[in-house]
Image (cartoon, rainbow, N blue to C red; front, side, top):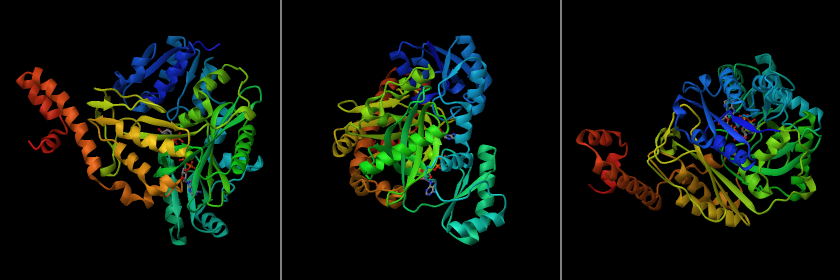
Length: 501
Ligand code: ADP
Ligand code: ADP
Ligand code: MG
């Protein structure tokens, strides 16, 4: 019986996991780096252990220190969240060796799915369609040229160990093959320590549609339907929704069955995601499997009515799943917006800093998973994802209206963020029509980046509210503190111009 879980992660996902543990009566242990001493997951957990300096390589990726914290706290299980060590087979192996339950699949499943070339082969053997491309690793430039002649341009050269949208090169012209191959290889080597690359046909104007799966240790495998994740920037998801506006019931069933077959092929246990790339004629191809909880898992939770973290813990505990495929249904429609501390007007540069004011939206159908509060300093060391807005409606139209309303209520001051950008996506004609591909952001750049009076007004309200807080502080400040406050206040000049001072 799992009684105490160490969460080997930070940010919104650590808080989200702790919440489910608390509901299950399971004690929780947080781990934190120097920069995260005051982070929300540290405040939320029953216990917290310092695991090293701010850079993740010294803390959230430091296996020895995390295991030490687990032993000191006598945690019987570790939840890895997403990112960091969640897809590291050496970490899950080490947990097993230490007698600690790893809340996730076996090291074998992680390593075979973590290597895209191996994964492609296993899926082909299991009868799951994969993107046309090479069988194995590309050994030479000559091999790259001849393969590409066979499958036809355009193609993608991809890192076998790739992840997070990195290590991909799109090739349109034969003359670019050699240079792209070299670039993809060296990028793969630097980012993933492994220069193995393979070649895949580039699917034109595609959709990214993925299926959530759950598998227990008793041979039960189910899928919890799809998530449409085609709103992407640089191959990274920004907004996800379920159901997908383009799938037919028949295709949904077919792809769901393929996802279950894919999970069975690796003897999967736990929660996982089968990602497919889908063309305009609804031909679908296996892209990769993510052997962990996904950032966008809450939209599935909302529409299917499950708590995926609880399911993960039950499965890790060796219990048989009580969910039955034919009893699962999609109820209504859910949309998730990823809120980043980044500056859309400055090429989406991460924008760390102090959150001086925050208004979180409430009301019917709204869920916010986050890790920020007023006064917190967002560190520059980690992923700039600071919150997720998950909205449910009885149908897609209601979900869209509600997302718009919630985004308008959402205010974050002190750090630049993408709230306005998200609102514009929700207002874009192609998005409203549900007719969009992975090229949506690129194709709607002008509309998405435009400034308008309404946006400016909202922004001004946020700034003025923050300014009132600032004035309150100044009232009590000594002259010396006042100079410091003035120097610290990044938007000081902007406030002056808004208030016409
Ligand atoms: P999802 O499909 O759940 O959106 P992502 O692929 O965007 O997942 O990754 C989830 C998190 O893990 C992000 O914070 C991302 O930056 C990080 N991540 C994913 N793959 C890697 C990797 N290979 N190396 C480092 N970070 C990664
Ligand atoms: P990662 O491990 O970085 O998540 P994926 O293989 O899942 O890599 O691909 C990430 C994204 O890149 C996809 O969601 C899709 O937008 C794009 N992509 C990847 N492969 C192809 C392809 N063969 N054709 C078109 N787009 C692709
Ligand atoms: Mg992917």
